[in-house]
Every structure is written in C-alpha cells, then in structure tokens.
Length: 147
Image (cartoon, rainbow, N blue to C red; front, side, top):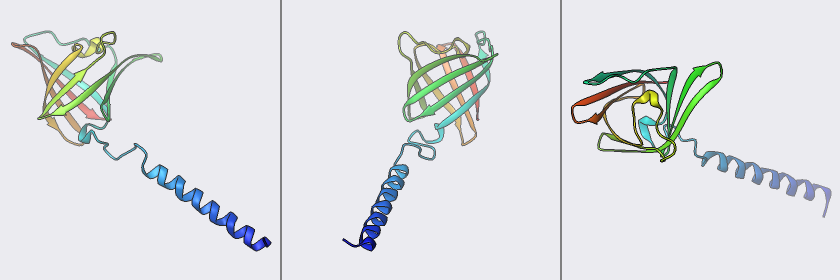
C-alpha cells in the first residue's frame, strides 16, 4: 500500500468516527422540553396559598425539576445546606401525579405527602399553577415560575 492510500484510509476512518460521534450527540436524551412537555426543566416555587388550613412554612428557596418521568425537589436553605427529594411523576388530563418512595417523603416545605394528585390550573412555558386538596375541604395552591 502506498503512503497516499494509507492517508486516504486514515482520513476516511476519522470522518466515520466524527459522524458516529455527531449521531450519538443528536440522539442523546437532552431533548428541547423533553418528553415531559411544558413541565420539562427547573421551576422555582414562588409561593403557596392555603385555603381552610395553614400554609407550609417556607425555609428557603424551593425548586422543582422535571425530566422524563422523574421529579427532583431541592430546597436551598443557605450556607450550602440543601434538602432534597426524588420521585416519579405523570401528567394525565390536567392532573399531575407525584409519587415519592416510602422512605423519601416530599419536602415538608411543600405540604405534600408520599402520593399526590394535583390539578393543573395553568401551565405555560414560564408559569405553572397547581391545586392540591390534602382533605376534601382544604387546598394548597402552588405558584411556580420557570427558572
């Protein structure tokens, strides 16, 4: 084999590796808005309004993150201290179902339990408003903004 033939094979191999790399990047799980639609991404809990009950105490900035079927809640308590919870979510007919593992309940700052059904009152690319009824005669309304 001549030197020019070897260089041609080496160039072809390099192009093939680059194409494989680009293909892998384009099929990775970093979809715009992901399969979770408008929920995809990180949300900042601005406030919770309570009706016929006391609102949960806010002890720091609380963030909700949605990706694929996983919800991650993180409370920034300051001084590099965080509380966190992971769970599974699904959105069906304007109802957001949140399920947290038995030994990892939702953050106390949310007023949520292990299994929850929240009504989606509003969802846009920037705002999310959810209604939760812990009992038939009480409710919590969550106001979140895309972070």
